[in-house]
Length: 301
Image (cartoon, rainbow, N blue to C red; front, side, top):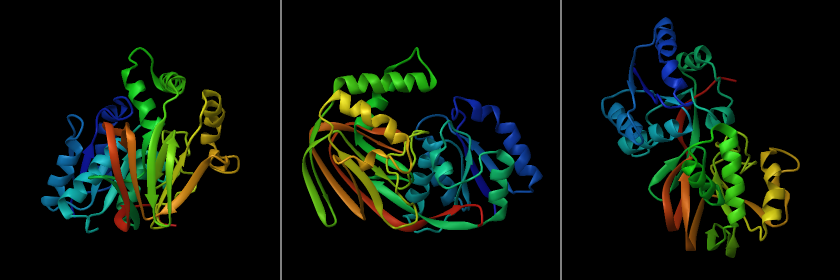
């Protein structure tokens, strides 16, 4: 068995590149037969993962953050047609590492490499929006709208940049008129956000789908409409609560479990998957889940 490790040097704002030497040293100490490649830009991880599977590497490891995990997952699926034959692992080197946190995976390099050595896998659900797969979270409406604002802010960094983008986004009071259809239900009307989760946490601190479970064979999605800036702002602190007091308890917010979801928006909406905006303006989206088709390396309970 030869392991392919795909490292995103930009993850964690270039901290991943600084930790490359430690990662390789740890892999060698663990006597893992590996090849490590470094991505050179957005989308390169997809190509590298696809090539790795076609060359017979198994497992394929993503060393980086949630965007890196997502690219490697998409590359694996592109190569094996989602047949669940290739194991996937992560070395968390990003800023948020939401998927790793949701799965209770270790964040330190020696412990993360230890998970690879252990070889224990659990078959996780994999989700798809249009032609893109995601492992953690996807959204349309306010979430990616704020992400686009954040990308345009150059002078600020870290959480202050995200907070500023959030306030600017709320100030715009964006609204979309959508029709949603899912197994056993539908909705038509104004929408502030639609967020689809395979896991509870996204963005480092937000529990946008607090009851999502990546092993239950279902998508969990949340939709709702807040007509005023004040109401939107009043709910923001509650998006950071994973349990009692969550924003999904508000009567105008609805959380649904379903194997599929179809969305049609009159106004074009931005859309992201695992934090990566894949469309700035889109009208129609189709979400589905593939139960238990991604063998992911985890700690054995």
